Length: 298
Ligand code: SF4
Ligand code: SF4
Image (tube, rainbow, N blue to C red; front, top):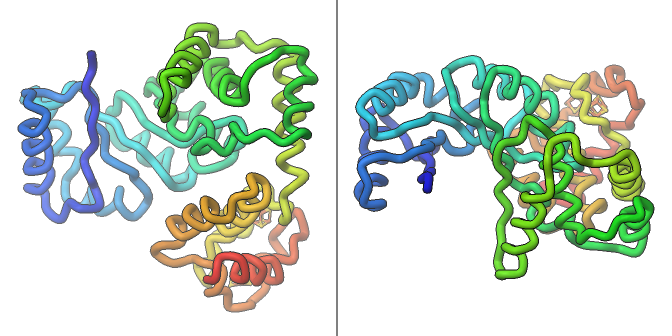
């Protein structure tokens, strides 16, 4: 058995806090070491704060004195800062949001390839987008059925991850014994490169069903960034589209609120129009941002 827990980076105010939290975790867990210790939920801001407080020196010391055996981080931000963090320390693992609908989101496939290429183990969270990918409509059902193979939506989603050689661990929330059994079966059957051409085509068909529900044709290319007003345009449109793709405004608003917690929400647009000349999709960005404000109320 291996034990993993995380340092609540956003609560850390001093270098001493890092030792205090780790020692308290060891005491509460009644152990003298933690196998995998992660810096929790890094983004550009928390990573820079942690660096200023000498977090790498803390990790070196905790590894040297045996309180932790491996260092890693979990992550929620865009791929540029993800790569910077990967390169900044000798990590064993990283934990990211990843699933067949989020290849261009956060670290995404680019980040997975980058981190795996540098020897990091990849731990996946949100493999089924908090359960949203397990909801079936008749269109989604038909798209999966086009493969000629019968699987539950959860098994399909997990099999996409197990098919990837870069993925080491998949974390999937389970609330019934049946889900435990299903996930174990999926993990057992899923091996890198095991999905066939018709199976991969079924993923394309399902993605296309979801994408048809998108309201703003944003490809997340980020050419519009940085915006002079600090608007997180790709994140605004990703959350807005999610609300329609998965028919779940509440989850999409939660994600939008988290992404814009420190600024960058659609309501701060200064109407300068710089972004619109940069967008290869010719999206009327300012008008679309108004729709985001109407839906999420900021
Ligand atoms: S129009 Fe708004 S979103 Fe676009 S660049 Fe200007 S401030 Fe940023
Ligand atoms: S440039 Fe256009 S397509 Fe690219 S992220 Fe910005 S809004 Fe989306």
